[in-house]
Image (cartoon, rainbow, N blue to C red; front, side):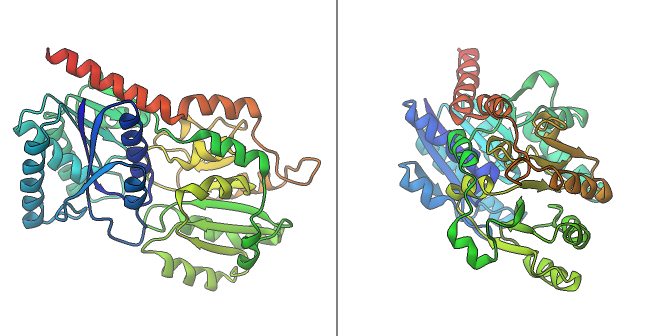
Length: 391
């Protein structure tokens, strides 16, 4: 098949890693694949070089940006129409809201045989104004008319989209976001603290509570910081590791200073995706206090590495975290409940003094659901089914 994937930007993020692995996998299976993206702007890093190194064909549309901008969006529409006319793909597969709206509109106008869109996370959420929320819902409803199949990374995404009338339930297919699971399984068995972490103030005597997320609104870092003083009074050996970068870093660093926990909170900054297995394998506990997700990749990644996770119970979290088996689910915004769970897990020690790990059988069960090869195969099946339906 000739396939074009369209995404707004290839930053370091879950949707982008998912897209890159999909494109690489489809290419390995013999398909002609082109990845179209806007520029990777902002403090979140980029995956473009990794895309090119892996042999993926990449084309950048400079006007394709995340922010709404009528003139630039018109230029992106024109550029994408020209590109798709040249490529003449059988399948156009879009990701992210902006690329999803523009890409699907152009593909439908050109009568591309199959148009697919993956919902990694919905653009509307309870923390927006009612007017903005309805605006985004309206855009998604219209774009769904140009879409043959909607892929979601969790059943919860399909349920939420159906409830607001984006499309009917029969047009959704859940395909869990694939990853290179063997690297996480191996890292979990090693549990090594990298020597270079000594310069960050992290050693084998510390208990590492890790958060992997962009330092951005609604990711919940503020919640974890407010718990930190009480947690470190009980367990002075705890170090909170914030992996990621973003617009809120200066604000968070200021709050750390105000709370007097500077010796216990480490900002690791941008970390290449290739090193995340090592980071998680060295961690004792992963906490994900985000208020808005599809299904955060760090949840299955941590479990694969044997690390219990504590997360707010929203979107797809309940589809991966099993209570008291691989971690705990907490009602969104209930900081006291989350703090109590963290303290409970810190108190659980094995014979070596480490926090108890997730059972191997659980890790392998998660591995079977999240292998990148499984994801690519399931997506390829969707393409085949939709193409056969056109004949």
